[in-house]
Length: 336
Image (cartoon, rainbow, N blue to C red; front, side, top):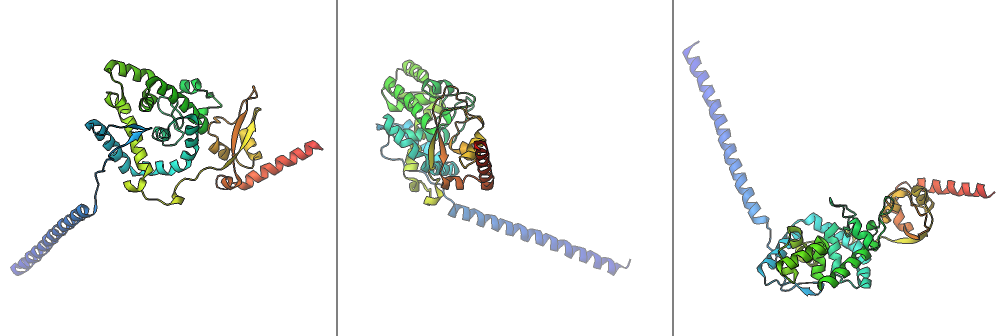
């Protein structure tokens, strides 16, 4: 190969290599500039605020001693957790709009302070859940405690899922605890760890109130979780929660139907009411099977959704209409 041609080829290779290196250098500079700009924007635009604590706060009329360092820090923790766990707390706010109007009058009637509605909220988030230990429903009642306080619990019926009845059962427990310990705050703590467990710790530690006790992690946080929920839900905009009235979950409208006989087939029963099994269970989650045994002719009150509510609960309305028409036709044929 001619020397001049070789030099030309080497020259071309060097130019290409230098161009690639220049691109790499330019890209590196651009990425560094972009990273710096991104970092500055993050620092300028993103903020997580510390939260001011109230000057005073009470649970069920009993003051929390915020002057104590551990008390103020525990409340601060729960306020931060619930304020910045936005999805959960927004759901708490939405569901509270539906269930507080159900629970509040029962608490008042039973002589239990209104603040205990927040206990039910932090126990279950107003969901019909079952804990690993078997605690069930809005009030997270164990089977033994439920039966002791008047609820029916068996394979077909579990009234821990009945919001009104379980609220009354929880009230019965709380009033016994208040009588035993002389304090609603201690009654709330005993709801979490049991009366015997709390009494044992109070005797062992020679302590007379919740705020002087050393307790397990869950119970030591328990009242502060209630207080944080109370602060946020009573004044959500102060903690950054913004919503419209239509964003909240509405109250459920229904009529009541007394039943004092066995219902062998609840899906068929639901169709006869102009709804379906899903709609029946939505309002009566305490029905745990597809039938209602009732050999003793006990009176049960079933909640049947109004026509307006059934319109937004039942998808296949034609199926419901067809069943009721066929059922009515069968009845007409039998009567002939």
